[in-house]
Length: 447
Ligand SMILES: [Zn+2]
Image 1 (spheres, rainbow, N blue to C red):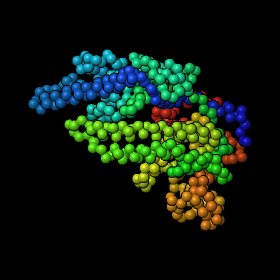
Image 2 (cartoon, rainbow, N blue to C red):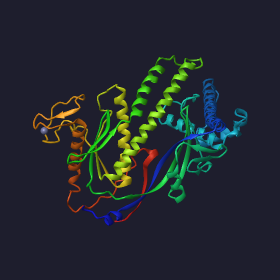
Image 3 (cartoon, rainbow, N blue to C red):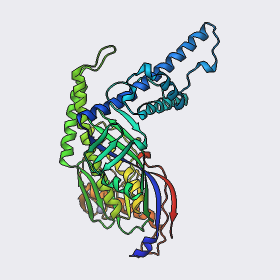
């Protein structure tokens, strides 16, 4: 032990991070109708306003063509405020039922449409198009319109108390203690289920970076998801792809195959029911697989960030990799990206360090025992057998050990093991996913 406990305690920073909390909700049939009405109202307002703007612009163009003078005042403007004003003027005619839904339903549509126009103007996107019924849809509520009734119920203005599937205990505790503030709440639906997600500003107390005493290298695999080892060659982590996830993934491939064979919608014809049904099935299995995998990744990354000081992973450059069309590979790449993304911000929260080793470092080709490197090692070879020293070891474990050593070697020049370590301050950057962990400000650091 180099750093004593009290010294560690001193290095504490409080930062405000924006975190997203997402919960599946279980509305009653009446509530589900009301939720659908809000989502549909948003879509209606979006399409109606887009139609008005388009018609107005077309009319102006036609006038210009025949030589009628058109001034800037003849054009409908597309800032959020302008669109809101336009909606207030026309809503009684366009949507006599508008008062059935909350005001934010329509304001959200105006906001989205103005954003779509702004993106089009800056050349980022195509001209806004009309939103289709079905598929992904969402509506945002003003922060005052949604609050937690308790750990299992969310109260939405005009809709009432809706039960959540999971406990919102952690979020509730933040709100109770005053360390969290709801910035926005968004309701979304994937066609089968409803979710509510909160954007919350949370005050997090984060410790200073710990010296690298507990080091782990992690290798990703297809059958064994994560294999972790220490630099001295001990395996300390083994995460198997859970059986239910494997089964669900197989089922996903199956239903996707069915959906791909269905005749899709054609112009002017209502989408075929068999196509809709097949796609709904895909959605459902997809959502289940995604949830299980996300939970597993969250559990693993939290455990790692809390229990290790230095976590070494391979920097997987997905774009630069050879295209591999297998579904399993595709899924594992996505999972790996999510894994490193979570580690990136969680290591900052818990005072550990994440090191990404260059992807050209041949972690799986080097012998962990004698250090000689093989020229070639096919992906199918699951056991590493060294021709030089005769050492045999599991491929993933071998790679994990090498990663741990490489990561430690890379940091030892800064913070040597056994030396008097001066812990560095957290490097806080906002590169993490904006929804989950954009670090806003560094408020206090005690030394
Ligand atoms: Zn060897």
